[in-house]
Every structure is written in C-alpha cells, then in structure tokens.
Length: 379
Image (cartoon, rainbow, N blue to C red):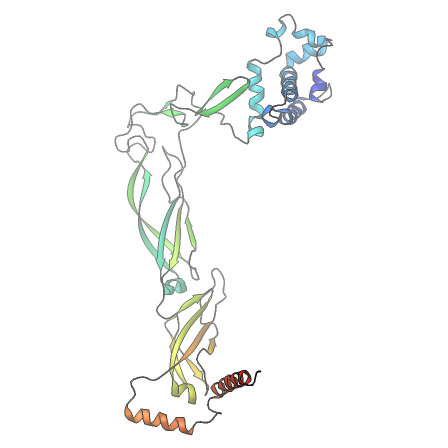
C-alpha cells in the first residue's frame, strides 16, 4: 500500500468491515465538520475535506472498494478505474448527499408535476355583540380563483396536455457544477413546474384557474371574541394547474354596542339614576344581552360609581358551558332645568341638611380646613 496517502478507512474513521450505512453516516459527519464554508480561510480544512471525499468516493462503490481492499492505493494508480479516485463526476454525487445537511435545503428529486397549492385567503367580517352572544350562520360572497372547467385545471387547451420540460427533464430544478460545488436552482424554462404548455387554454390563459364569485356559509359559534379566526379548509384560492386549494380564514371583529361594553365573558353598562332614587333608594330595570330585562335594587345613599353584579347575564365562553356576569354601574344625575319651586325646595333642603346627610363632603372640607390651619401656624 502506498505510503503517500492515508488509509481510506482511517480517513473516514470506520472499521474495514463497515457497511454502507456506517460509511455514509461517517462521511456526512466528517464532511460537515471539515467543509471549507464552515472553516473559511483554513487550507488544512480544505485538504481534509478533499481527503474525506476521495475516501468515500472509493469505499461507497463495491468494485472500487474490493480493489482497494486487495491492492490499496495502487489500484487507482496508472489510470486504474478511470484515472483515479479524485474529484470527478462522483464528487458531485457525493456532495449532493450532504447538500441538505450542510445548508438545510431540501433538494427536489424526481419529476415535477406543475401543480402548486393555492394561496390562503383572508376575509374580514364585522358582527354585532348579539351575534357573538347567540351565534349565527352568515352568508358571504367572495371573489376567488377556482379550477378552470374548460381545461380541468391543467392549463392546456382542450385536447392537449402539458409536456415535460426539456430543460430539466420534469424535475423542476437544474444543477450546475462550479469548481467542486454543485448548485441547484429553479429551472428557468418551466419556473420549477417540470412541465411546459405549448397551447394554453384560452379560458384561463394557461394558469388552470379563473376568478368567480362564490357564496359561502360561515358558522359563527357562541362566545366568539374580537379577533377570533375561523378557518374554512379548502375554500381559498384554487391551486395552479390542478394543485390543491388553499384555505379561507375569516377574521371577526365586534361592532361597538350602544349599551354594553364587553370584558372577556363579562358585560358592563352604566345607568343614570335620579338624585332622589340614589338618596331614598329604589329600583330600576335594565336590559340584558338576551333581549330580556332584570331589576336592580338600589339602597338608600347610593353614590356614583357603585356597581351591582347580575350573575350569569354576561357572554357565553367559547366552546364551554360557562357564562359571564353583567355589571351595572350607577351614575347619580344632577337635575337640570329646575323650576323656581324646585329650586326653592332644594334650597330649603340644603338649610335643613346636616353633616350626617353628606358625610363624605364634610370629611373632605374638614381636612381642607386642617391643611390650611397647619400652614398658618407654621413658623
């Protein structure tokens, strides 16, 4: 065995009885480690990388491996086995084996079909709070690409068929060797479809699809919130040349309600009450989201901002049996446009009032008085 070259088995760090799977695994591991792109500017790595490829090129071939096992490196000297085991056409095939591992790119193998999945579509829909409460089935009309009936989605004129691309042989991609790199790119003739159309369909101009208005039924479940997304599988744009269709996504937004404000599953509303009702107590009716009514009892002395909770009168929780609550916040309304008699009665009431009728006001102004008194006595 020649002493100028290292043993191929040692180069790949495998035993002499290693099977094909072990050889390939070892080659990938070492090639990724010593690849020049991962070690820029390092000539030692480049030489190591070449040795690894040369060793694998020999050992992966049954005939070459048998010759190497019997005669060593001498089997490939003096023109043996086509002039050596260096970088020839075999290197390109070896490198393509690890192309995906090195760069994370999936090389397309086999013949292309020309079929491409259609694009997903988005439709924005505004619904009312009542719709979100009850749920509904809505009808929508959308312009969408559908499969051309004239050519059944092939893109070719009736009576003809797409032909295999002569440039890429139907693979959709072409390879080009540059030095000891093999680059793969989309076929410029068929744009990656693997097929060409010589006589396109006049109805769809060769695309295999046409634009039509479609009416779809959308089921909106109870409890949907603002921003909820509903997916209609297969209702998006038709695929190119008979490819599978995309999906349609319905994005829901809730219109503002004139009475209620939503917070998750709970509803809130503000109700004005008279000064008399707030002072003496009483009750009033408020509407509920289910188009019903409920009574709210107000105790005497109620102040602005007080909230009353009405259980289970809120929104249903999506895909659940739970229901939120409703909160009623009262706002004590100051009377306006008083008659002279009303003004006199209020003035009389003010004279008869004591600190007990307005404890919050009395307490506040007492603090104000103490504040200014402390400033006056300061040195």
